[in-house]
Length: 368
Ligand SMILES: [Cu+2]
Image (tube, rainbow, N blue to C red; front, top):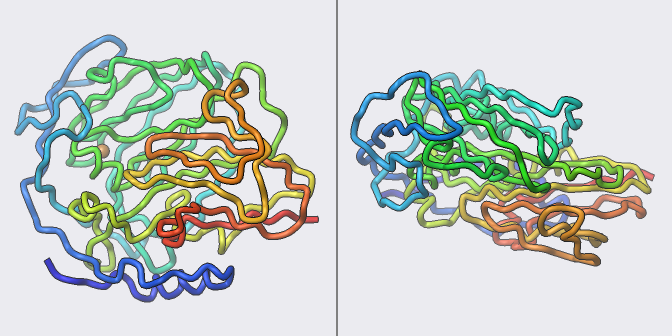
């Protein structure tokens, strides 16, 4: 183990952005450690069961967690291998806008699991494991009772899988891992409305979630909620090793220690300070907040505002009113609403500030 600074320029720029809002970070994460190389993760066995198919039998290799159960086996895992092409990884703000509800009641999603460098800030590139090439992955939107046909094809040499929290399905078959070149397919129909996490469930789950394989599926209730400007925020935290050729691998040992280098909304630290979320005075604003973790909760709060409604579970039945802050657990999701009746700039934060000030901060601009 050695102490290695991570991207001091990236951190200085990030600190400067925070300081513009009076949100100063102490010397967080100043000592970053590398991870020792260990035994590579083995492949997964194949399981067949109701609701799931595979296009071929994966080879039986060193079997690890064949049922895609949660991370019950401790192992020394290497840091993510660093893919080439960091220079070509361009920075892009993650659009938090909730996509429109599709008219059709059946959706077919054919997604790829891929490993590639992703630029999380102009001078911060990570060796990500992704769904569809980004972290978080695409926002899925559907209604209660819709049919989702999902297929994951693995293009990476590490086994991957998909666990939709909006599904109720046999995880041994549907959420099983597939090796490179193979696919897993299943169909589900959400029974409850809400903001749900999806994530790779392959072992160790901590490594796969912590390397970027997460996203949100938003399920609308049968009767639509009141019209609003709607946004999705997926909180993720990052544990990074020292850069190799300009790309930071994720560090499993640091993930176990749970002292993150960055905590983010939608994958990029402080991105909605640099490019805020904008609404008009009088708009109803609805945030779907999903906490992907892998470990840190999100005490969601908007400075200078209060939530008139927070849906703790399936809307509209689970509402509480007049809320300043509510904790979204790792692996959970909730819906936060307010009417933006005061113009100004309102920071939205993880009010657990030891985490919030590592990047889970943005700005809601209410234009007069
Ligand atoms: Cu994975």
